[in-house]
Image (cartoon, rainbow over all chains, first blue to last red; front, side, top):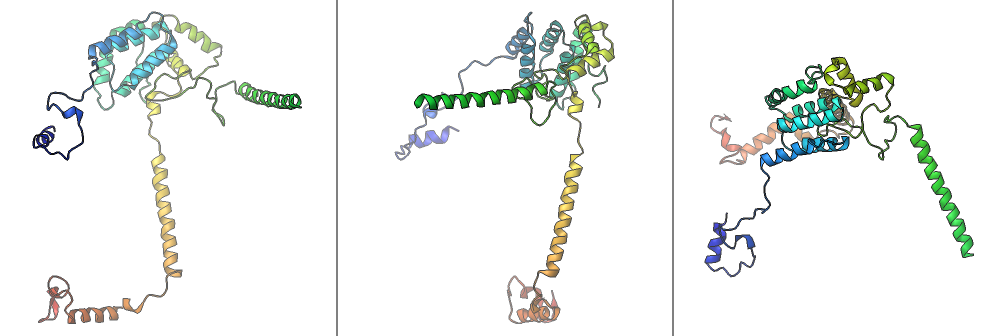
Length: 141
Length: 177
């Protein structure tokens, strides 16, 4: 990508007046952002912390869940565990079931993600008494 | 005079404001339940069923009767004590449609395809009527006899003899190659 530009400049073509600041030092500088990229673990930890707030309110739960579902990913079981416990603190069983439905939908064509999530969340589901949509017969029309 | 006019304008404005306020107030009080009528009050928290936004701003059922309220009280205790029907009832209080219900296929495509074919049919009728009533009489150059003479003339004058028409005609045996 850089090589044709280098050849032109070394052959001394004066008519090429367009400046390309990024390509001045070939292969040394790239036009990438210098922002720090968050790792997966940091992302998960941030969201677990968000939902773990002891006095989380209903709005924060809604905002958090809606934002999380907006991302191009299926949340890790630990994030969902934290969210379900937040639902428990808010005495909101319906939202807990809704969250399970939402992550199943997020998995899209990958049918093996949701069973894995349920398997990982099983201890929490049993502890809190949350029934899955399948248990309640709500996964079919 | 200035005082008088401003006074009049002020009175007019306040009257208009009062009318507007009472108008909207009346509208809001008459729609105490959040049903979708002609216009949804967008200044209030809204309910929605969206796959990408699972938790709407307000629950589906706002006005709870006594059974709902007692169920909500029970929800504050351990959820293991709730029966399946109670859990489903709690869900239905907060949400209108489940995800499978939101994603249910509609029969709209049948209407669309059916409508398409009906339009094609009507267009066909229009075209047929037009062919019959609108088109002028067909020129004589389309008659079989004329076409045959035309082709013979083209072959006689060796039209496109290298790669085209006449190259396909076998002049010796008087037939197509």
